[in-house]
Each structure stands twice: as structure tokens, then as C-alpha cells.
Length: 77
Image (cartoon, rainbow, N blue to C red; front, side, top):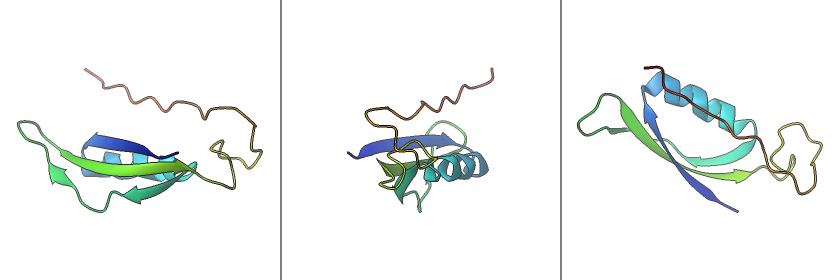
């Protein structure tokens, strides 16, 4: 199962999110940042896949049938 993801924000914040995702998922892409049109920051496109060694749970337990927790990024207004 592959999921395509678009991240938008400041480059350092995007890098931190990619590092967090990499703990649970195989990451492809993300090498190129595109300037956002009409907004500050950049956008990055990734493809993610659960790591086979963890079944997506990040700790090696391979919880069968379970989905990995959702990573929520709320914007402060």
C-alpha cells in the first residue's frame, strides 16, 4: 500500500515531519521543494509505505490488522 503525501510549510518544519514519518514509513521523494504559489513556504511531495519490519506501528510489534496512529499537524492561528 502506497500513500502519496503533499507537505506544505517552512523547509525546516517539513524536514522534521519527514524525519518523524521515516520512523514508521518508507519514504520516497521529498528531495525537491517547490515554492508555494501565493503563500509563504514550500511544498514537498512524498510517497509513503509502512515499513515491513514494523507493520507501520514503529516499534516492531507488528500489531496485526491495526492502523498506525494519525499524525496531526494543526496550524496555530
